[in-house]
Figure (cartoon, rainbow, N blue to C red):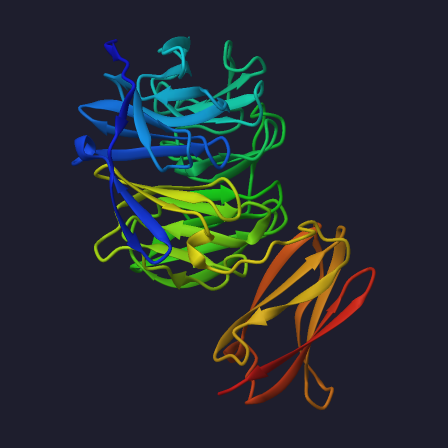
Length: 429
């Protein structure tokens, strides 16, 4: 493999759109962007491909980028092991460890009988990391690779219970820690969404009926999937680790789902790109707003935030957008993201016509009943009746047409094993 090292500081042209600064790396004009990762608010790395893959590194939060590595294979994903060391996954089924200051590129895994493409790598600290490779054959099982020594050695095993491949790069795979991960399987086997809690030794199918083109989890409980349906980006939300899902029609026009990013310490604030544009939600994914940062198509591939204020968007053609203030969008920090009591969190929209999303959370597993009453206290319908839910956040879609509602005030009553909560809603016909 041809390898080139360089320590040239790249002079970037910048223009400002709102609170995002645009940087252009001239020699990457015409390139495809693949991945970005950040160790902290200062140290970040990106990779582009144009004939060969190039890695750029910043030590000042993205004010300057310097090329540090060039290889004649495609670097699909990268992850920081520490602030000067990267793990690299390639389209030739290889995992590398790269020491940036020393310029040393070390091959740590390669076995074409096991996998011919590594499409995901993620480190959780300086020792522990996970990678995933597609099956070497269409009817085989994806390969899970685990390291406990900073990427020097990788143990691998077939992903038990599932077959095929991701059908993409890192978009359909997400591990939140070394043990817990989520995966959408394509290929010859049934296309399903799966979850593991034992580092990929076994996988359980989740009750997720829609196809998945992108998935992302904030923690072991909260996550989102995205797919295209009828020229619209449609999402599914879970707040209980995938045990239940709520479908949300976003209104975002068709564009391929490329990346989602939860704001650190605030799972209610999420950014999303469908390549064409940038969007955000400040209520956990129920409602979405366009965030205009460019007067042309964005061509975005990957989003990364190191803190609640500092983040980057990686785009094709050598373009990187940077913000130091969350794009000047206000986002409160969620002080206690894990529920310590069960309650109703509200609904959107309110007033509504014809439907609204009701949002609640449980402090612990419980049997849940949700009843709808009119303004006179008369029972209208059982929305949920004694259904068991895990601890976490949950969503329920109330469609007025299903219950023959007339305009007026209604009350939603949540009854769990520990308490009763009431929410006032308004239907305008």
